[in-house]
Length: 468
Length: 92
Image 1 (tube, rainbow over the protein chains, first blue to last red):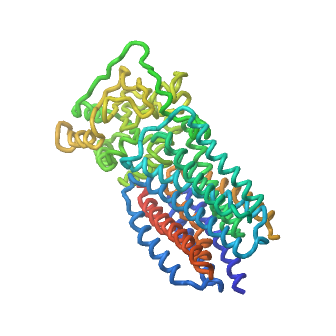
Image 2: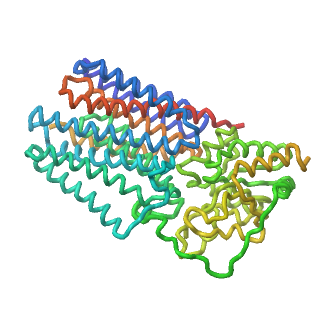
Image 3: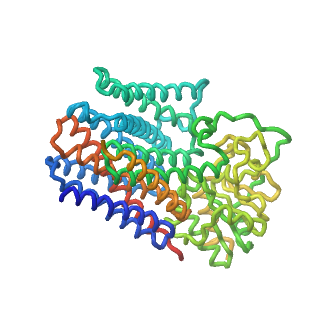
């Protein structure tokens, strides 16, 4: 009877999870998706908890309470910190899978070797490796995104790095195979610990050479790993529910990774094993052009006289927390009859969809947010392209400069607008360490400074100052 | 011998359903999508719950309790922040 309830709950939860994801296809129905997800989760937890083999309720209550104590504050972080929070939650997912894997192995040993089949043991090894590498890898990613002091932000590379990394993974895999062949050998417990250690180290090594611009892809890949470790856990525990829910998460991470890679014209292996920062060749060829600087008054005038303005936000907007000022500018311009659209590059920011969430937070209607592919044909008709802290995603060198690390990456055609205004924090080159010729084009005017400050100055021009 | 083949079968089918459903997700919502799928994959909670709550040796149950805490954190923060973000998407 109890088992039937458990099975039925698993089916119901799976259906609810699929509905939850299905409702995410439209912002109008998306919140329903959250309720479906919560319902599915509740059904699954309750149906497991009432099973007769669960006897220690105190520990469960304690762990769940602790989960709430940490989880609620984590859900209230500022939206600019959402990439870090996401990476952290992948770390927790990996940790849970890894720990359950280790615990299950020792349970099997205690209950007798006949529980350990080759299939289950292989799944367990995969679960442990994936779980623990996701754990440290995601922690490193979260640390880089949070700009923790002792974690280097810039990609760290050294000769032979890929050999070392793959060596560590191969060592874990070899020990894993030995463990699957001899799961009850006297050394097996230590072998599992060695796998745990190697996976932890591999996770760190995997993320060290990765820089901020690659974070959207890396977070998506880690998302996929976290899902796959849940699938492996399902194989280990014989739970269909874990397999299906983990597969949904894994496929979501996979699709996002593919979209991110395509948006950067790079392959998975290139992101993971071809650190961006290593390609920092001097590209200072030809004559040095200089940028032209514009004052807030002049920029405001340009914007006011425009009929259509396309705003291209990037990570600089997130760092400066400028989204609310951008909203004020948006209001001032639309009030004056200017059409304002936002052009969103898939990899703008530090995670998939980062810009959309920030702009939505600032109450900018989502109908004004336009994808790269849709906005590009309109760019030649656009009067002013306002680039806010975006760099590589508007660099025309991506179209033709074969020696450039961003060659082939699809970009937003800001350079085709009649006039370009670019807000930039410093006069240094962008993340990839490459000059951006957009800034020295004849029709480009630079506004140097923190995005929030510069946009604030522009808004002042409209609100009280020179423009009426 | 349990039904390993049927589990692999289910895994493959679930992946295809996942690919089909996720492909249709609005591009606006990729960030909330990631936090939602993250909360969903914290379904690992059911595994941790058994390891923590069943009559197993203490050391094993400690591992389970830490795993349960980690999954629960993901469930709570994942669903809450997804809803918080989705509330912000307004048409006009």
